[in-house]
Image (cartoon, rainbow, N blue to C red; front, side, top):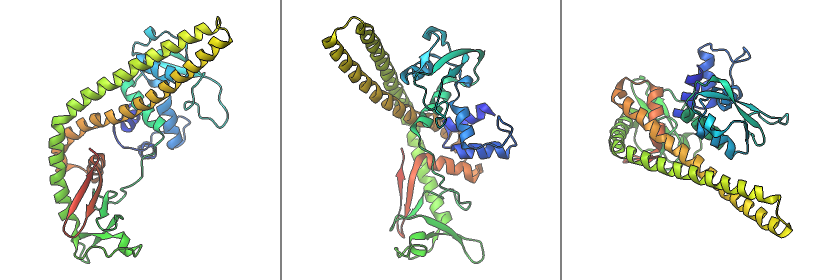
Length: 324
């Protein structure tokens, strides 16, 4: 179940809460024997004991001010890690690791470093996934909006139950919109979105690989810059012992400047890594899309929400705000 947890969080839009629901529904006990919640899932995902630690994991912790007891040459992508350090009672164990000690463990890890690091960048970004799209009548729930007032549309059934329509909530609930002047069948909108979705995926198949290569180059460039900055900072720190007051002033200013550059690069690395993960998810979409007609409502929602921000519906037009 541990591997499943990491893969769900790294490669899909599944929230921590949804992962805990999945574990509870499948009767998988939490480490303390109780039920899972978001905090317990977060602690597991943060824990380096499960990662097959390589040089990227070493650099991740070093960039966050961690003291690493092993040389980088020992991080060969096999063993897990232990993280030691004092923390305040209100501070979570794995979120602030500055001056904590990281040591390689004797046991082998079970999570590849790419998946584990992607989870860390998602957790570090501290953006909880919105719990939109709970509706069970259409895979467009959560993203379908009225094209006039931009508020959400709900699904209502006909008196016979044979037809489903979109209904503007800006009209019925908020009284701020005239809504649609004719019935908007859910099935009609879904058919149009399906066609455009398939066409978009067809286009993306030709550009995703090139984008992936470009992003990998940019990520590697940032990693090399971070290593170079660390070397410069270490060299300056070594000179402090021999420096006079004037030299110390310039050394401290230079270290401060380098540290600002480092922080900026770390933010860029996190952003690029998260954006790059979309290409990985794209590969899953390419594999699944041929089986669209047999997918569950939730599977269709997942693909739809990965590619589309919003669908705006008016009497005469359906427009899509794409994420890609």
